[in-house]
Length: 375
Image 1 (cartoon, rainbow, N blue to C red):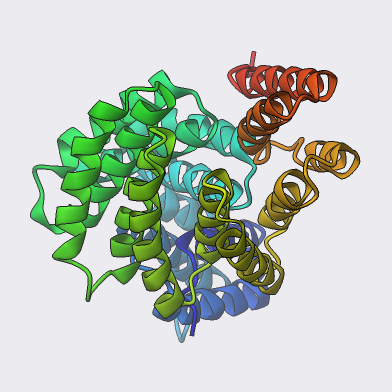
Image 2: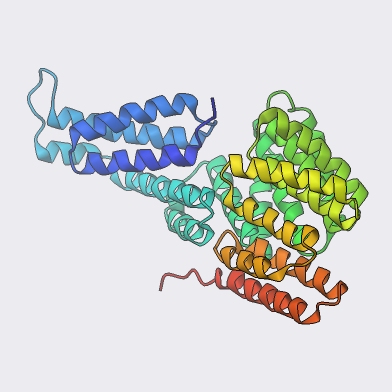
């Protein structure tokens, strides 16, 4: 059975909180039971468990006020006194987790601008957060979303802050590896691949120690190394590492299968190994359809337009339009550059220029994501 994401459970806890505030006992009890079932199936997340414990405390006080068991009903003044005994601390923490998990939820849905907005609202409650690991979790989530938005230097700032906390705690080896991934990804975006490689090699060494306990992070370590070598145009090495990632992703039936197949198809098309490339293309498109991964369905269709239909631009430009979303703009930027280079090489200068203009447009939309102020 698939694990439930903590972001999804966090959204349920938020809904539970709204029923508590309205004294909707039946709905609150129902949500409480759902959350407790989901926690049993959830990926490990200590922050979510703290959020749950805070909400369970508020729930118990509500029940004692609304439906006391054999006791005199609590006066409203007593109820308010109970929930306000630690009101400032409690309310700040509940507000923090409300926005933090809403940000995580929006991030998982590819709504990066919304995610950053909620994370910034959570940050306002930071005085209530005293635990260093909780702060590291926040810094990591900020680094992660800014990386996906290609706000490289901001992402690097938060990644470094998270990394410097996590490295002090042996129990957080997975997060440390993930910090290496984000730092390396930022170096790749800065075209400084030589600085990315040490982080990726260190991540792979750490992931090898966890390959039985956490095979997903092991697969990701191979993929990220392959991706770095791909950006360096070392296609043979890139293919070897991504093939290793693909082996692991197949065992896991991972949602990352389409990405691995896509990159291997692209690498082989670039090397003029068309039979092998088409095999990866077909398998990858099939996996994207099965997973209902519309982003990678579009990216596979783009490979078809470029390499199988030899630069057929009508369908390619329609794909460009489909990628004009918060999640899609970084992919549009890379695809438009790839297409522009390919078309120019094949003598289609005017179409190449259209692609390069689309790349610049995507870059501008990514930069607009920095305008997140609430003034």
